[in-house]
Length: 314
Image (cartoon, rainbow, N blue to C red; front, top):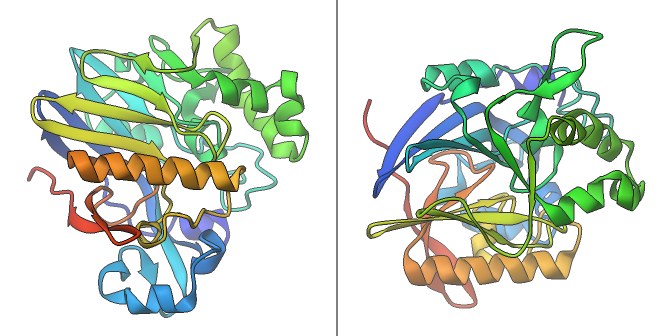
């Protein structure tokens, strides 16, 4: 599928809900079928998808094409008087030779933010849950064909996992030199943030405010992280690419095709889901289509859907 074909799919736009004192705004740039189901989650079987068609289709799986349905989206959190943007999508006009869906992508991310009432200068904090092409692209923008990449959100501090900055940066040879895309990504979306003095590298646990805390969940990438939200009696966790499809609830040992350390990714997934089920957290994966978030419960050796997220009516 070419990126221009993918972008013709319908998007849901902007949705909102309140969790305690924190407003959560969902900003969807694109949503639709992307990769073959077992290409996205190789450890699953045809029977797994077919036997769960009643709740996977049509929002998360397209049976007639056998493609997983994904979303390209970000989350905006208004917390403690500040605006926090979680992940920044693909970015327009990027050289992404190893990701044909996103190569020279043209989307309306900033228009979607504007629809939500958010201007670039309003953003106080940008969280990159990890450094993959579809999570850091709008970190920067260019003034033109020959222009330099500069921070899209000029007043924001950019919270970047130190382990990913090392792995994808020049110190570790741009992801060990396995993909040209990793060097391109770092040079157009991360290095300009460092040059502008807006990058904050973190490790261990990083508290943003009284409601929001970043924690490591490595495996998908060395620095993959989750963002926990606690406000009043409400709990949520923004898990980045810990989950690519709700089918992984059934078999949490099944990784996506993009996970670098398979064993570590599976261990992080199970650990985060165990806590989410125990504390009744809403789980917000980066690419979950449909409702975009869910509450889960423990069931057997895996997990099951408890309920989908419900957004406030406009």
